[in-house]
Amino acid sequence: MEFKEIVSVLHSLLEESKVGVLTTIDGRGYPHSRWMTPALLPRFPGRLFAVTGSGFGKVENIRANPKVEWAFQSRTLDRVVSLKGNAFVVDEPELKVEVLEAIGPNLQIFWRINPKPGDLVVLETEIEEATLFLPLKRESHRVEASHG
Image (cartoon, rainbow, N blue to C red; front, side, top):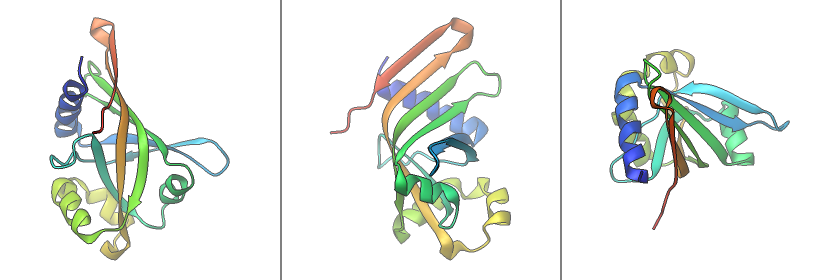
């Protein structure tokens, strides 16, 4: 299986569920997971994007240790995708607009807890490894991303 095949499955999972789980490592060395609303942007293959408030703990976690993992699943649990990579905090207005256009309709809860658009930053994950797990078929496919 090729990397772009797993990304294609990821794309369908994002269209279906709109969310994934982002795990970072906190300052004490513990994993910290939270639900996020990410997007794939066609002009950035091999990368995943989300927005968050600049004061949230995940921003501090990523700045201290950029290693992250994402998890996505179908509603029926017949497809599970996990991604490993390095995340970066990006404060670039054009990228914020592009990410918000991609995920904006799915951020109702986010705006309730982070009502200040000026506090937004983008979390950009450079995917290093992707795994597709198909539980009903008892199959697992792990592929390293090629950036170049």
